Length: 214
Image (cartoon, rainbow, N blue to C red; front, side, top):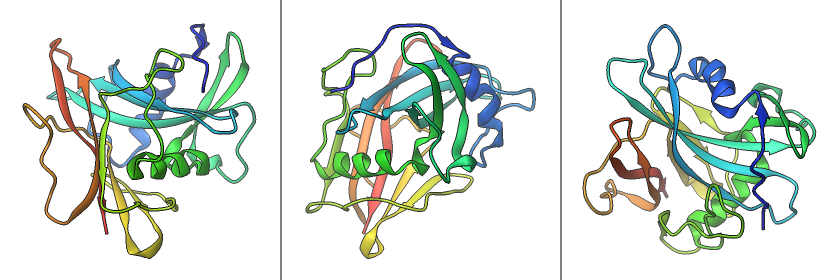
């Protein structure tokens, strides 16, 4: 299990994302740059214990309406070969030293564990507490689910993660509240990932994080 260190990061994750988010095609914020606050998220464990993995949710109040973004990140102790295009930035960690933060949709370790999460083989972990499952994150999948994902493609609505056999996972980068209860799945969905997050007005929302199509 990953050990959560409560320590200082320089720059902070929100500071890294303030610079990085406007470069994404799915960013909908104001022209002056995002105004971010942490809104929630969860973690996944690396079986090898080397790569930190976090699905961070941030709220942005820079636009006409508040927006919530889902940002999968990986944290590594050395650069990931061939992933320069996915580098969000580097940080100095008070315990672990220099860390390279990547868009997790381009990190093979996160993609493998995300497939396991959708398929029910991996448990989502609490964002802030070591060795604690996050029961708020729900999932479904028809059958065993994909063995993995590859070749992430960003567009204005989110990120497409192709899987073997023609399946694909649509990761919702801009989150939409679904109202009370579990969000309804779109027609043709073969699986999903859902959870909740905080809104700037102090309330909580629940909605889809990702939808799997076969």
